[in-house]
Structure formats: structure tokens, C-alpha cells
Image (cartoon, rainbow, N blue to C red; front, top):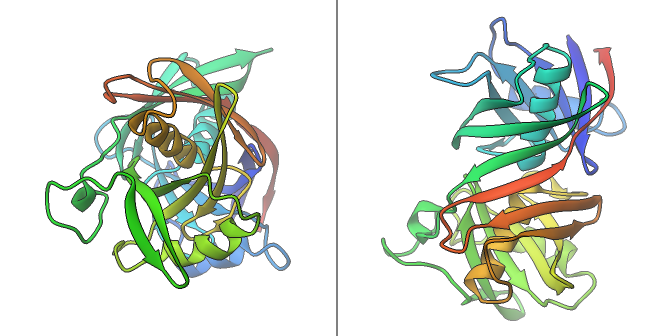
Amino acid sequence: MRFAKYHGLGNDFVLVDRLEGGEPILPEEAVRLCERRRGIGADGVLTLLPARGGGAARMHVTNADGSVAQMCGNGIRCVAKYLADQRGLVADELSIDTDAGLRSCRLMRHAGKVEEVIVDMGRPELEAARIPMRVSPGQRFLQQELSVPGATIKATAISMGNPHLVLFDVVEADAPGTLGPVLERHPLFPERTNVEFAQRLGDGLAVTVWERGAGLTEACGTGACAAMVAAVLEARLPGGEERPVRLKGGELQVRVEADLSRVWMRGPARRVFEGEI
């Protein structure tokens, strides 16, 4: 099997091209491929498949533990770069089919190669039952209390095509590694959740992400977007402007429209190597 290795700010992926036909990588295959000592090593596998009803390709995301993610912000930038640089798509814009819907990508090139991608991440979902959460239909989970062993925290839940729980100003240095896995599997989230630990930093945010199915990652594109949506919802930052989100692996630029109608993400994508396994 041929593959390529890509990353977005250190959030790394094995990319498998099955545009000519085939099925998504099986869960057990993904676990083996992502294993960092006996496999290739990655946070997840991106399988490129024929689009189902629009777009240049379909992106299927399998996490390192074999679970499936509906959407991946860093992954979609890597897929857009692959399609442009390796598959010869010359347009400045392309759409990619995901399990969260069609997502439009604008390609920013340097010396003929894609360096950055601007992704229309769509409208954030705030109704808790659609995130999904086990709450009454119509409710929002905004700065609500959540009980975990030994603590009660306040958090905001948002879907960017996949579920996120955003906590602000948790100061304990080890909180992402200790609270993250507990909150990922909190009973309120039937499909588990990504967890963002956020703080205001200048005109933007600093965010650490415990990613569903992958653990602590260098970066998470949907997580950066969810954290910025929460910041606007909680009046920590105004909407309508592109703002930096600092992650362990680097910086993304995120714009949340003031009326929450759209979220835009801009960031790099890098090709590392290709091979056969």
C-alpha cells in the first residue's frame, strides 16, 4: 500500500489515496499504521475516496484508536494540498466532501506549491442535543457546570462537525492530561468529545487540545475554531475579525463571524514523505 505522510502544525496523518476506488482504512489497520514505534506513526489516517455528490474528493478520517472523526481541520488542509500538488488540481478553490458536509478550501501557493489553506468551516452547532449531548432538545450548553471526580468545572459545548467541550482559564499545568481523558468520555457525550483548554492571549487565544481518539496533539483545527466560537459566545473576544490561536505546534488564524453564521480557519499544511508499507 502506497501512502504519504502529512502534517498541519505537527498534527500528523497517514494519507492513503483511494480516489480510483476502494474503501476507508479499517479500524484495526489505522491502529497499526498510527503506532509510533511499530508503524508509520500518526494521529490519524486520511483516506481519500471518490466524492459522493460534489467536491474534488471525499475525506474519511480514522483516529489513532480506530474510531472515526466526522471532520478534521488540520487534515482537510493536508488533503487540499495533496489534491493540488500531487493530483494536479490547478484551481485556487476546491471543495472536499466530509462526514460533516462539503467544505470549501481556498489554496494559497508559493513557488507553485500550496503553503496555506483557508477553510470555510461552516456554521457552528450550538444546540446541545445535536452536538450530540444527552440533554433536552433545544438546550445550549454555555458556561454550564459539569461534574467530574474531585471537581466541578464550567464549560461550553460546540460542534464544528465533531463535538467539542471548551474550558477557559484552567490553570493546572497537568489538567489537559488528567481532565482531558475524563471529559472525553463524560456520560453526557454519547459519541465522546474533544476537549479544549483555552486562555486569552493578546488579541487571540492559547489552546491545548485533548483530541477524541488521539489524546494530546500538537494542534487541532476544529478545536481551535471551537475555542474561538466559545470566546465570542462568552464575550471574551469580539467576532468578525481573524484572530490567532496559539497551539503547541504553531499558530492558526480563525475568524468567527459576529453573528456566528460562519467560521473560517487559515493555516499551513506540509508534506513530509511518501512510502510503501
